[in-house]
Image (cartoon, rainbow, N blue to C red; front, side, top):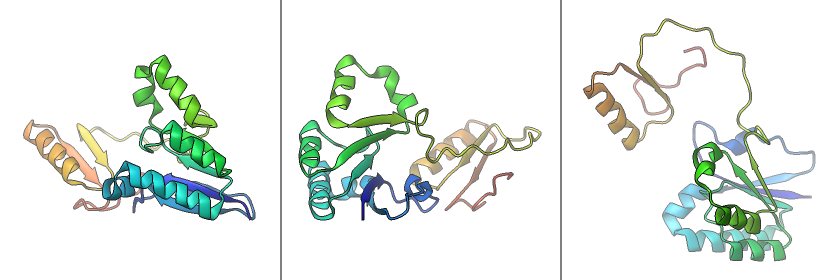
Length: 179
């Protein structure tokens, strides 16, 4: 049975691998990349990927540059184990403008296929536009509450901005799409 390793943070509000529809007969192993890198460090995380590919023999590994900490050397090892590498750059709009020719060359050495949300719209499922509401907020932050986001909201409010929040950990809790 063919397998897929999918690198992503384990987000209780939903992560990209939650929206992947596998072909019949395929399996997926979720690799909590951001958590593992913070807990183990990049080198141990890379060794874990090598061990997973050695044990599970996945057809492909989908990662998220630049958050995946892959190097050309690790990529070569994974390929020797029979795993194809797909870099799914969901934040490419943020970083790509600063990429040099050397950066693009390195990406070419690491990935068998490098795609962005323009190429493959995973986790960007288009939904109909919500009705426009009268503006009552200057800033709306929807997502899981973290200490950094809470500090940002506090600073924005201290600056006199009207800030609405919603999501896991905020007093407003989960918001529906229209909300």
